Image (cartoon, rainbow, N blue to C red; front, side, top):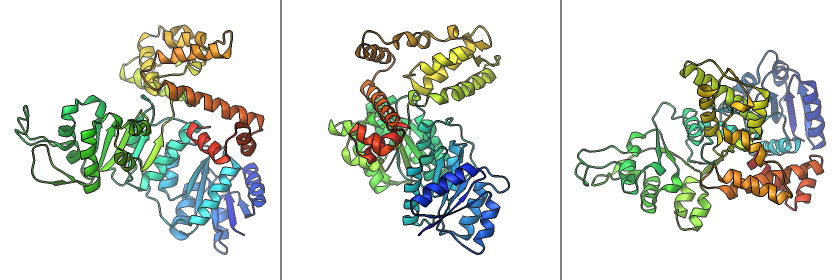
Length: 458
């Protein structure tokens, strides 16, 4: 029987965990502080430790550090009610096996414990000390924070998937800043902004006179990023010919400048991003399958703002403060009635659209207190389009029309995601939160339900 120790100053959390884990066949012991747990370690050792972050006296991170330095074969799982990206980075960077934002599903926690006991990790973390500026306390952002934290000790290739305006480049920068290459260059290139005939010159550089207009030698982005990270944004827009050359560089770690005859060796970490479905592009023969598998080593799904609406308030405060400072304007404050409308709106342009609205409000709001009538027209009138009409089909049709007016692509993915989220929430309400019963109601397997809930941030 595996021994699991719990450190948390919250008696209710200790009791709930003890009861659940004992029922799952573990031998449990709990402590109200990190110091009490450390005293016990002098004479006895568990197979796994679960610790809260915020406790009187010794913090969970300090306990984690002590265990990593002295008992490296004991996996540690970090719990925290203050779930943000810095907490995830500190947890994984400090060597934690997993990071659990409260409240968490007890079944999921048991699965993580079993996996930790099977794998018995012995890898120490790499502590980082970088200020981060990705905002979000929603469940939908926890998978993103967890991924960035887990990747903080690696230079793995990453593919970031998300709609336009969700902050993919910001996540790429955070992956770089919290990696072993954080003191080396981060070079970004948006494939959608480059004419097809100039893509290879941008990526690999060119020699003087190699083509009309090449009056000087040019160093490409791969050479600029040598030793660091190259971020290829909107990778789905890369021409097929250039995809072939990129694949060769990823395989051989060398390339030739356009018009050059000497191979150039590089050591570059690749982070790619796209708002498109690369699987569909592969099926349509518009994206190389072998390149897709090269890039899709680790995938991070960035949630759209409509799936993390509880973050709208904090994001708005952040943007309004930034713009009041930079524009030397009085700080604007959003009233409750205005915030209610903002929370109802679906933000098809995502965080970028919200930032633009905050910029507009800083300049155009007639007073410091932003009221509902001060909001842009599309936000104010969205509530009208959302009112049910003669049938739910008509209401859905109106909603689709409203969303389609604010986007250029991806309507199907937006609608399907919204419907799946509604289906899951309905099934969970019907089953009183029991995943097995909810999966049966939906006609899915439990693993499918769990996977969908993580993808959708439920």
